[in-house]
Image (cartoon, rainbow over all chains, first blue to last red; front, side, top):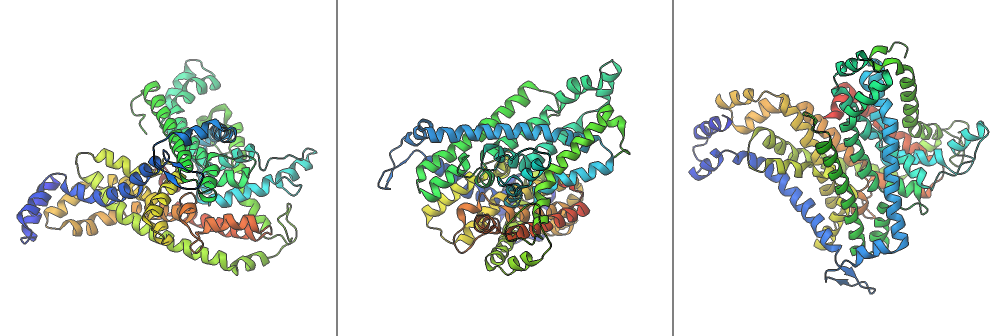
Length: 311
Length: 270
């Protein structure tokens, strides 16, 4: 219908337009393609092609003299998998990402429940508290954690521990510091999809469970929790892949003692200038994110094939 | 808190409110602590803060590195926002108002920078910039920032367009308005909330971006997040805390503005 009136319009106000152009514009879809084209071309040229080019680079090799050897090789990947230091970095990355995802899930659940079902005033306030950190720069937030977790007795955590007769704890420059900082950075990305999933649950389903004799806890475990899995899955996918590929939190909170793939790739490219090896690390990061997203698709679409559960 | 609706949360209402309160404390702690320390009259960052002074604020506001990076990030954010609006708005209209083969694929392409690791996007851009000899860091940074902000505009404008009845646009076209005139007079005013939300998201994303900027910046053009990162390793006085406080103040203002404009929950869930 839009296209029919469009043809009418073109014919009336733009008589100078050549016939072939008019015919082209009148074809269904042409205007849509023209509208989308600039953005699509921009993304192809500055996103798809560069990423492909970088992946290709990961199969080249840098000779000890710094020359680029363009015979295709898996040497960079072999190096990443065989040298203990790099293997440790990969294990640390996966472990920190897993703990961060679990931590975010545990902390986000009560928050999301109260956001959806709590008193409207509390819910509104909580939404602001959850979203606020998202809009504060990640360097600033991580700096806040450096002050709190500082290992000296002038750190906030150790001050608190001393007040109750415990400590001092050494948290900064360990994996735990990265986990704490990352949970803080990514918690909103777990809480928001979870709240959305909880909001979609029809309260009468839970009431039915309660009427049939389930305790509140049973109703939660058998009805609410399973129905919120799609939200948890979306949140976990986001949190895991963003933690695995993060740089600021591991750099400022882990330092040299707890390295992750993000800090390793920065070192290899900007300090060692080993581009092919850096490209291989980056490609592994793409692989991790891809694997997590495929896992998500498998989990939600194969295991929970309920209608209306699309993202 | 006692005024809550216990029926909705069940008998677990009290523990849930307590848990949500504790998580809120966790979320706010790293934002509140730097603010308190920024007034501390001590030479180093220490807890608890002692005394009261505003000298750290005067110090950082006179710090040329901080102010020039701040100005550069503002410029970069504005450029990225304009670019993202110019590319993202027509794309969103094309995807929602027109049918053409491959549109689902194109939509996935336009939104893909959101889930793709930004660190890797930055590496790929640096690789291509090096290969092409593109050394103007402002241009490189602006292009990189447009890339990561376009998806936000596509998303918010698409959401707004779905709320607008297309038959109003059809009526305008039937009555003789051209496509551009129809967009400007009919569509644009109706999708204004989406355009504003998209612009805010694009600007904030650019202003806060680290993982793309870290590869494309040079010694002259240093975006603010990178500058703050460097300063945390060089300065150990509460000056950094003062910078953090100013940035937090900026974010809080933005949150309140967004809450007023669109309702925060709605803006975030789009």
